[in-house]
Length: 261
Image 1 (spheres, rainbow, N blue to C red):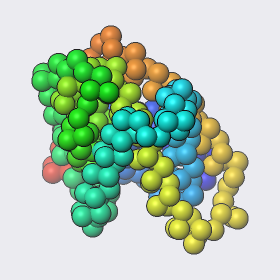
Image 2 (cartoon, rainbow, N blue to C red):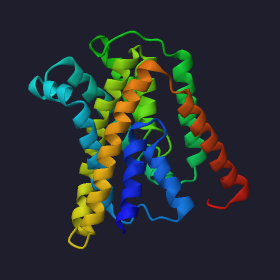
Image 3 (tube, rainbow, N blue to C red):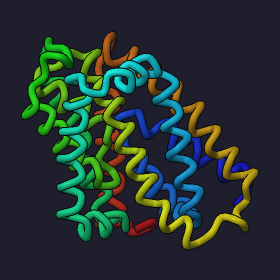
């Protein structure tokens, strides 16, 4: 693995993890289009996720510290409920989710992301804060996050839209979504640890891996900042049209041209 290759994947991971376009979907698409083996190193994948986790901590350090200082507050409970729903559904559909990363449904999944984003702009007009969110509504956001486990369904797009569907105002929907990414990313890292330990890390290209993780952290930080401003001042329609076009192109290749799929 070269440094440039690692930095490219780090940039894709960092940007698309928090933009509503799906990081996993783009990595799978890169693998198909460019012939890159994005699964070559489980340890590298883990480090990229840690990089994006650092980005969230850097932006929301005040909120994270407040939740650590007062772990019995309502916000923590809501995040735990949403996470628990996601975990249960992920376990129930584990085999299907694993198969989906082969890319067979990639085009359809990008279009699902587009539909979620379009519905967000059409239906979401909530004004509530996180403190006024009900447990059942948090569970609904957890369900939306579970859908986004599919590689080309955006986690940030699904959870922001889900939070808005259940009445949160834009700022609070974005905050809840990005805070919810902490247990989601941390959980994915923990699940990868046994495989990383089994494969070993002594022969890994540490320079390239650290470069990729650094790029993922920096790009992720700016992606979160960008999204927070965009959600409040603008809308997500541009991303909706982008993933619509992407989904159509992928579907055309899967069903007609068969160049990459």
